[in-house]
Length: 42
Image (cartoon, rainbow, N blue to C red; front, top):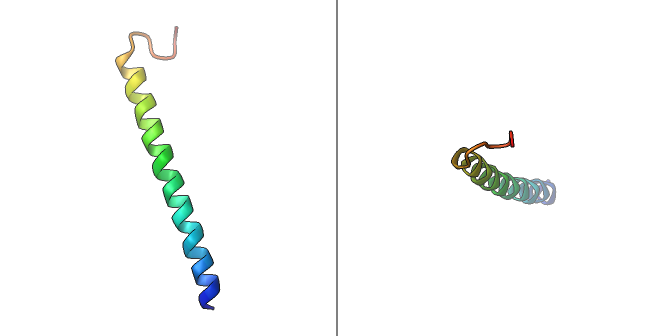
């Protein structure tokens, strides 16, 4: 039981780290788009 739990925990840790990276990147892109004159239109 414990090894399985550890595997799940490791997987969740990786997913959480990945989501944090995605969140940072998306936030930066969103700020860049807001700061630019035209965003994605031009």
